[in-house]
Image (cartoon, rainbow, N blue to C red; front, side, top):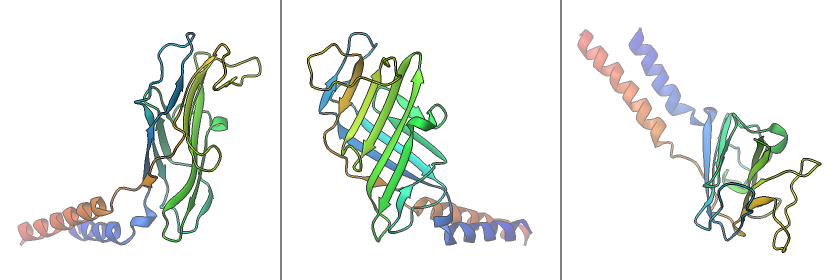
Length: 196
């Protein structure tokens, strides 16, 4: 009976990979511009960049365009990491558009939260801003950030911009699922041989 269950599980894994949770990964280019204040510990450098990992309940369909709620996510800029466990939902948004093959060509992935009086956010987008950005700021009285980029005024934030996009989002190859399925099938046949 156990061998039948393992065999069915192996076939199920191989037959329906699109119904399983899937993780999309992104690696952006190094930041081109950084600005750092003296009031916030640490600093951004031009060797840092945005990386993102977004897990969805299923693979994005071809010609999809809309917003999604990830099962899990992690955005990092080389200095801070924002995950679904700590992000503020009102500062987080994930939207994707795919072509007729299901390849992502437009996106916005943004996450933020407040920590110790500092507002932190990481964004990668070709829809809204068109590049990767990250900042840590001391909020003003409205709870927002005064991001006065490229101006000679006292800074209340540390920020970084790439001014260009990475190559796009990648999906792990389905070979992992195939290997898992083959391994389970192998266990089934080994058990059958030992029983005989």
